[in-house]
Image (cartoon, rainbow, N blue to C red; front, side, top):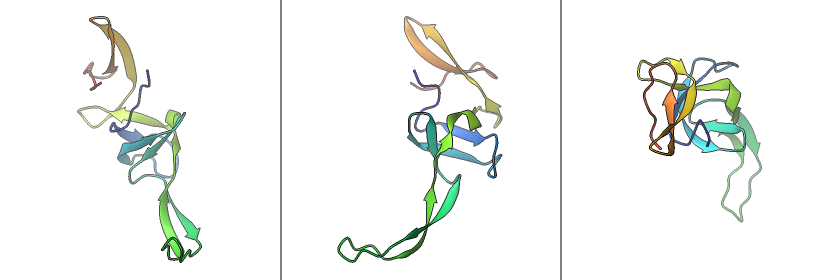
Length: 102
């Protein structure tokens, strides 16, 4: 069971965007793509056949899963734990004990 999933609200713990919050929009093997965080400029060649104009675009790059933490109800970073509830695994926040949606 993955501890951080698509749709979770997370905060960046390290790097140039430290402290920024965003929502997970994509999960790779051990990297996350977070909305509005870790944005880089990318040069794109024009492709008239595909209707793509050339120039510089903003691209959201992935962040390693160890550099983020889930945000609890108080807006503070929290680690995620897993416990059994009625025979099913359930994610919960270590700071508040609140359960996260499945």
